[in-house]
Image 1 (cartoon, helix red, strand yellow):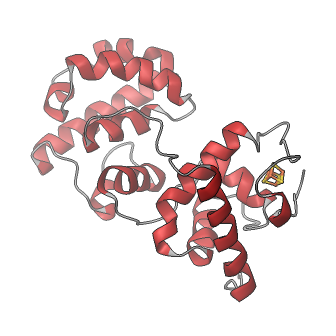
Image 2 (cartoon, rainbow, N blue to C red; image 1 turned 120 degrees about the vertical axis):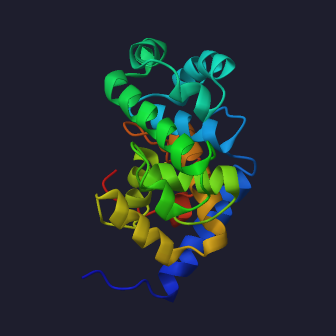
Length: 216
Ligand code: SF4
């Protein structure tokens, strides 16, 4: 069983969060959206796809079908066609269709601001739910762990886990709750700009003094 983090780990996590806040004060979610519903759909579409591509697709999709009721009425083959370029489009279309129907039938077409209710929607896991709750509702229910967060927090020695839910648990224990939402946005930003998967640019990295560079 993993040991609870000590004061030293928590202090270091706070310093990492502070450095990232200095480097990326305004970092936020890159998925363009006008409502919690649109962020939910964009997040489902972002699996195995760049945010840039998702934004291209949703610019057209949300222009014509901005709400859950609009998308629920869209035939699946048409939806597949509209989201095809995001990859895994059959599965995504099936989940989005079912998710929108459930939102209409059980939640009056609105996205519930509740983790338990969200993870019961088709295609919505804990990560997607955390994204929506954190970014659209400002509710810190967890730490979003995507590929950047997983890679960088391992390099920083904040976790040894590979399973996203275990990584999330480690981060939740080390970071104060008020840091959870922004921490993910900033780490994702850092992953795109500096601590890239293949060639991390450690020289000049704002976290260099705090980073053991595990596995680099
Ligand atoms: S020092 Fe290197 S490995 Fe550590 S966070 Fe910075 S870029 Fe990533």
